[in-house]
Amino acid sequence: MATLTDVSLLRPAPSLLPFSKPSPRPHIHRPLKLRCSIAEGRTRSPSTIDGGELATVDCVIVGGGISGLCIAQALATKHRDVASNVIVTEAKDRVGGNITTVERDGYLWEEGPNSFQPSDPMLTMVVDSGLKDDLVLGDPNAPRFVLWDGMLRPVPSKPTDLPFFDLMSIGGKLRAGFGAVGIRPPPPGHEESVEEFVRRNLGDEVFERLIEPFCSGVYAGDPSKLSMKAAFGKVWKLEQNGGSIIGGTFKAIQEKNKALKPTRDPRLPKPKGQTVGSFRKGLSMLPEAISTSLGSKVKLSWKLSSITNGLLNPLSPAAANALSKFCYPPVAAVTISYPKEAIRTECLIDGELKGFGQLHPRSQGVETLGTIYSSSLFPNRAPPGRVLLLNYIGGATNPGILSKTEGELVEAVDHDLRKMLINPTAKDPLALGVRVWPQAIPQFLVGHLDLLETANSALKDSGYDGLFLGGNYVSGVALGRCVEGAYEVAAGVKDFLSQYAYI
Image 1 (cartoon, rainbow, N blue to C red):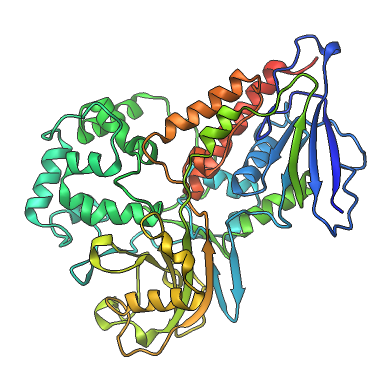
Image 2: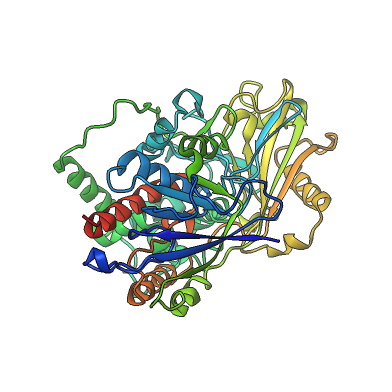
C-alpha cells in the first residue's frame, strides 16, 4: 500500500505549491500541510525528511524536470540567505523530465530535447552545476537546411548571405525587405497568429519557406494558431516599440548602448558565433549534476496528492480551468543510423555530412518535421563510418502518429529521407530508438498569455500568494528558456520570502 507523508511548512513556502500569505503576526501562524504519496515498493522510509517526521522548509518545488531542478539550484546558488531549506519532489524514480539521453553500442542520442542555446543564464547553470569541462558546442558555421522543391537549400546565417541564398526568389526578398522597414499593412488591432504577423510584415515566401518549417521544428505547431506575441515575443515587441521590425531593432540597439553593461561572470565560457550546446555524455548530465548537488533535497517517487490548511479552500477551480486549456500535441523522436555511403553525394560538404540539420515545410509532401545531424553536430555520437540522425514526426498538424507502431514510424521517416538526403537504393537504417511523447510540447496559441494571467490572478485572488507557476508552458519551450525562467521564478520566490520572512 502506498504511504502518505505530511510535511508541516512552518514558513511561507512558495514555488510550485499554493501557500497563502502568512499572518504578519508570527505567533498566530497556522502551519500548512503538504501531503505526498510515496510510490509502492520503496525501501526508504517515506515518513521522514532528513531524519524527522515533520520538517520546516522554505520552499517546496513540485516536479524534478529541468525547470524544477534549476529553480532549486538557482535558490541554492543565488538566494541561499532567504531560501536555505528547499526540497524538490518528483513523482518518477528519476529526475530530468523529458530530457532523455541513451547510450548503447557506440551510439549516444537524445529522445527529448536535443541541445540548447548557450546564453549566459544557461552557461551560469552549467558552471554552477560543475559541468563546465563537459560542455560541448556545435560548429557556429554549421549550415541549416530547408527542403524546398525537392532540394535541401541552406538558410542564410549572416546578412551577407541574404542576396545569394536560393531558398527565396528576388521578389520574395524584396517584399521581406520593404516589410521589415515598415512598408506593409498596419497591425490589425487584435492578437495575431504567427502566420498573420509574418505574412503581413515579411510576405508569403518568408512565412512558407522559413517561418512555417521553423514553427514545426521548434513547437511542432501550427503557425496559423500559434500566437506571435506568446511564441516569438521578442520579434513581436520590435514592431510594437519601433513601428517596424527594423525600426524596433535599431531602437533596441540604441537602448542597449545607453544602458550600463553588467559585468559578465568571468567563469563563463565564451561561445563563438551562433551555436548550440550539449554535454560530453548528453543533456542528461545537467539534471543529474543538479540532483547530485542538491543531494537529499531531491525526493524521488513522491507524488503530490493534497494540500490542506485550516481555513484554505481547495485550489482555485478558475485557475485549474485556465491551465487545462493548454494544448500538448504528440511528437515522436525517431533515432536511426546509416552508413556514411548512404548519404547522397550532393548533400556532402568536403566528403562529409556537415550541418545542424534540416527542416521540412508541410507543403513539401513529407511527414517528418525535421532531422538533426546528431553525429555531425557533437562529437562521439556514433561509431566511425556511421551517421546518426534524430528525426521528429507528429505535432499539431499530425496527431495521428499515436496510432502508428514504432516500425511504421521508422518506415515513414526512412521513406521521407530517401526523397532528399539518403540514396534511394541504400540499405534499411539501423533503428536505435523510437520515443513517442503523447503530450510533448505546449502550444503557445492565440490567447495563451491571457490564460496564464487568468490562472495567476485566480490563484492570487484565492489567497495563494506564495504559489509560483513555472515550466516550459510559462517561460518558453526551449531548454535554455526553461533555465532562464527558473532564475526568474527563483527571484520571485526570494522576494516573497524576504517580504514575509519571520523574524
